[in-house]
Image (cartoon, rainbow, N blue to C red; front, side, top):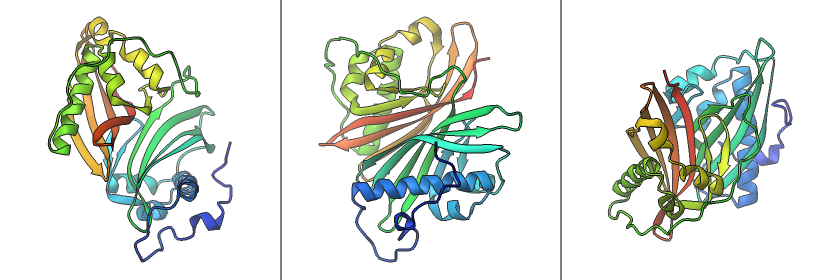
Length: 294
């Protein structure tokens, strides 16, 4: 497992934060190497409490969904980064970089040794945008991994179902994305696996509120379960924010739900959509618990 103290090859970092002229998106192999190097420096900056690197990295509209589900803007995030982490050791693993033109997703696991000796594990998704010179961090989301949750990706057999017969919304892209977000939640309430099958990209993955992560087939198997009907009284969607970067869109929102036994909880999520051949498809979902049911 890599250590934050390992040396990053200078050739990978060359040009980052220092190119004056606009340049095309780096080719995939170089882009992935650059993003892995940035991730390494990001983790190191968090451990030692240095905000200088992050100050150059984070875009003005950066938004973090923190471990506790709180939304933090750039200023709050930088203030947090100035404080050294109270950890006896730290590392990262399971790094996965996904490229979508000038937008990149980086999924990984962070592990930190707490003062009591226990190891805390957090799965995170960072979103970067190439601005013609450098990669800029526009979004981050963290979800603590529960002790009994395996680190490996969960998979399953997708359920058999009748094909979706509905019609996608049309018109302005932002309006379409908001409608798709509403339909995503509606499909959960109705256990409409056919809708998900028609709208989740083949490379879709989801990070659940317990820190587990699932591929498309496992997600479809979960969506087919009547979770809302059997366990929930309400599951609204609120505080929706849509941000678009080229043909990739980030939807941030929350679900302040109520269970049938009267307990209430809040989850916050980021869904990431990509436009391919004129149609928006969801490529990732990341959920963080903001308030546990009580």
